[in-house]
Length: 88
Image (tube, rainbow, N blue to C red; front, side, top):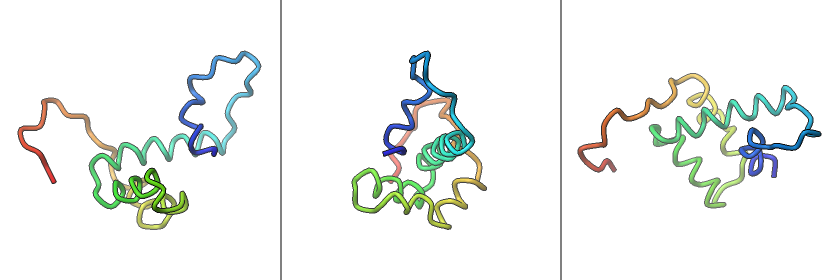
């Protein structure tokens, strides 16, 4: 549940909301990197899709292979121009 609603946290406007703690900031940082990495990395992308499609549990996103690729490899770079061909 925290993973599902965590992306909405930065947009909360409740004045009484408590500021995010260290665990929430770490989770937000990790899932931001995970989403960026999933866009360009087949292994991370497959794990991300499996979890989104409910074919695997959320722990798959924290497996060593996915976590290491998410944390250690560079973030996705944005496209400067539209792609010239469909990859796949």
